[in-house]
Image (cartoon, rainbow, N blue to C red):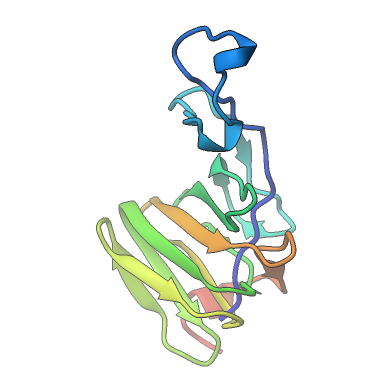
Length: 164
């Protein structure tokens, strides 16, 4: 299966909750960063990487020394990602609806809210909503040299429907 890559959509704002003088300002790497719900941008998934309607909200980018980034992807019924891989793997936490996940050469797997999908590094795969249900998931992935996903070809209607 292949992994998805996410591009940083907006920088996070460091929030400390109180004013400090420069002499007492803590090291920024040890400050809390809070990204409040409802203020992060939500963008349309690119038609280069998605079939159907998908919305992408970046939860947080990879900030060194961490290589981990995460986003929420919401798929309309029948929408799906293109085939892709991740250089260091990916974890999907299904948060709403019913979806489908498939690795290259394997069967289509049905997933529901509460399911967790662990995708190994370099495994070609796709994921998306079921034909009659929307689906949302949190996607968490490591970035290797700034790259979290390698996008491949679109998933055809025949592949999505389980026929060759």
